[in-house]
Structures are given as structure tokens and as C-alpha cells.
Picture 1 (cartoon, rainbow, N blue to C red):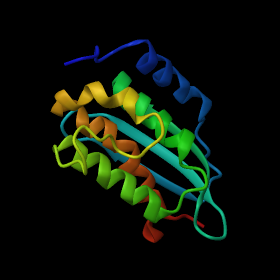
Picture 2 (spheres, helix red, strand yellow):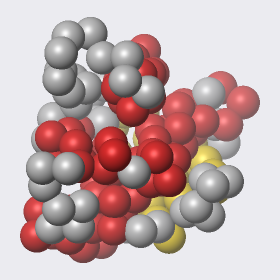
Picture 3 (cartoon, rainbow, N blue to C red):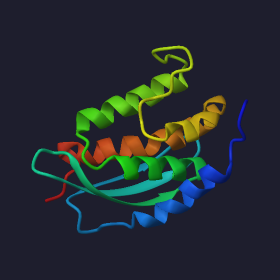
Length: 146
């Protein structure tokens, strides 16, 4: 392990979840829980006419890594399509499983390198994937609320 699991950057990202307040008026919602660690996210979002994420709100009950991942998802999801977000989620899951495209290659998500120390802690993977799973659930047509 080359970097501490909980460091200043992770803690700063965790605190930043407060910038993405819940948006009960949003048209799409998801509520998910990570079975292994019990992390929970309530996600609210709106999309533009093309189905790309426009705005994100959330309430996160998770460890600092889960909160940090939620911040990174919320910060960089606007403007992205469901296909973009699914690809990012799948790439992160493959990276956790040791199936990255190239030697040591990180998932292609902005600032994901800050979460890299968590790779050695499988019990934390669910908390990190949870915000990506939640945004995909909210974007699922069955998850939309008119």
C-alpha cells in the first residue's frame, strides 16, 4: 500500500458532499444501500432533454471513502449520459477486480486517483461504487418520477 487510506484529500472530498444538497423537486431519484458495509445514498437528479445529467443532489451515509466517491460522482456527472456513467461504473468495478486495460491504469473518471488507495480494501469497494450505482438507478426509466 503506497498511500494512506484516509488522507486529507479523501476527508476534504467527504466534507464536500454538503455542496450537493438533496433536491426533492428533482424528477429522478434513487435510494440504494451497499450490502457489505451498509453505506446508503439517497440521490436526486435532473436531466436535460437529451438525457444527460443536469443537476445532482444527495444525502450520503457512508464512510469517508463512500462520501468522497459520491462527491466525485456528483462533481463530474453533469453533462454525462447514462452510457458514459455506465462505462465509468463498469471500468471502476473492473479496476477493483484487477482487470484494468493497462498495467496500473486507473479508471477514466476525473480525480479517481484520490480513491486509488482503496483498491487494497475490498470491503470499501461497495461504498465507492454505490454513488455510480445510484445515478444509474435514477437514470433508469423505471426510476424516474414525473
